[in-house]
Length: 316
Image (tube, rainbow, N blue to C red; front, side):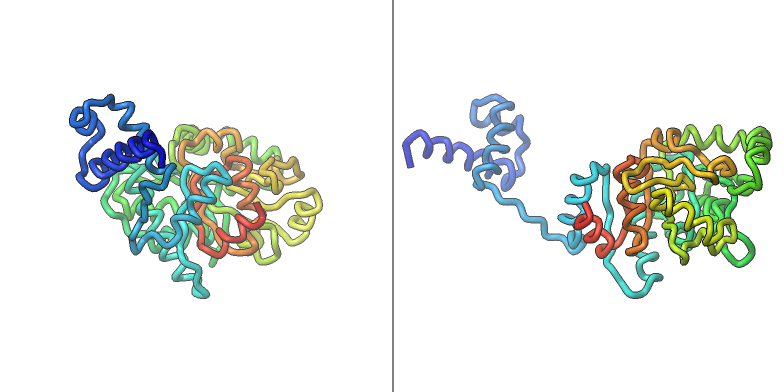
């Protein structure tokens, strides 16, 4: 090793030890060694590049950190949270609820308004979520009601359960999400209570939404609001699924269709303006719609399971 290289390595090693082992901050190191703070900062980075410093994370909660990081980089997500795969759906839902509770603890504050979607996943997350603390939030639905008797996935129900658990206040959308005609939707949009809900929804900074595929086992068919024929039509025009009843293709672009004019929900441009859009979904049937949602920036925080995460990376 050349003399100048030895000198550089010696200094980098000393700075790294003071920073990582002795726990001195950069300013104190600069003062101690009579160098600038900028040089300390650059030396710490240089020490990593030269493998003088090797960082290992030893945590029982670190199982999926690398996978999460990969998804965040590939899809430009703010955050990705992954739970272990299980044959038991209930176990997956419970673990997802734990992660969502952690998210809410970090990003929600008293007085915030949380926008809520619908679906089986959100129904189960709301049922199993255990708040880390009470937060005086308001919850508002991001679309009209979906679901008939026996199918408790209605957005109003999800919003109500979350608000009750957090000690907040929930608001309800007193209108179906799928109306009989364009004229019926226009009438409902002018209703003062519906208009007020959408006004609140347009001002939220956090949303929790589900994503639906267009397979025959989709919850959207089980609600009775859509038929298999509707889904065959949607599939024929390249739709991969929906995000908050926004029908998108695999590239995340909303696709014009014959159903849109009858749907009462927050539009794509308003949803994209939300600071934190948490999408919760898992399973092979959700791969296409998840890919589209991330590519189209309709979600920027993903909560899923390890198996789905692995498939998303392969597809990407």
